[in-house]
Amino acid sequence: MMNSIKDNDAPPDYSAKLTPSAHAQPQQDDIELTIPGDFAGLRLDQALAKLLPHWSRSLLQSWIEENHVLVDGHAATAKQKVWGNEHIHIVPQATAADSCHTAEAIGLAIVHEDDALIVINKPVGLVTHPGNGNWQGTLLNALLHHASQLEQVPRAGIVHRLDKDTSGLLVVAKTVIAQTHLVRQLQQHTAQREYLAVVLGSVNQNGMVDAPVGRHPVHRTKMAVTPRGKPARTHYHVIERFENCSLLACSLETGRTHQIRVHMHSIGHPLVGDPVYGNKPKAARSIAEEMIMSFSRQALHARKLTLTHPDTGQNVSWEAEIPEDMENLLNGLRQYSNKAR
Image (cartoon, rainbow, N blue to C red):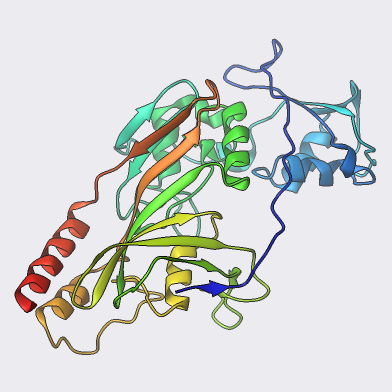
């Protein structure tokens, strides 16, 4: 099955030269980059926002105003034009928004850690980043306690998120250099993320959903496939079929909010247990439907993460076992399907 809305606007490859500076603050890394020629005519803050998308334009503007950004060795203004080949030197500064978060002693399931990054197996129920009423008890709070140097990295090194009730692998950068490299990999689709999803209905064949995702035009707390959304692509592969469910491996080219949940709903196969986009049976007519109705969160797990290590340049990969609740669901569906045959 495929919902095909084609988009050929792949992001360009603008490779910044990132080097540590002898004058940097402890645990900080300076950034050095060259403005690409096709940025000619852009304002400085616009050019930097394109090159460093994990920082907001308002933050970059504040750094420019505070002379933390030099253009060819000189102080600059946010509105001044760039014409290509200018050398940019940035000394990142921790922001008030980052520094106001409290470090909390929350246990982390760390799959891998080195000087550049941390790979975490996020449990169900853990919010990734403070906000929307969840200002404490988040992954960010836990990271600040685990590695205090993350106070010097925007968003405590978080470069992508998982929904509160989605489990699995998530990578965190421990330095500004690593963060910039990881964000670029996500943008350029060289970092690969594979999810396991249990969806309603029998999915007959492998496919891809290529449809833009954005805010729902009416229900603003939800996402939807909409022409005004951002390009989004999800590939899915059928692993196993049950009586009225399917186990899929889903891989992302893009990382939009609720992407897999929205895309699978759009082709008529919402995730089991999804409280926002799912379709629970109104009444259980079988043991399988009882299991589906009793599953209390979206059946989605980030199983595998593959990327280029920002320090070594080597391709590295990690896997996380499926969590107990999803394993129990799958075992129950298998037993029912075998008896039904």
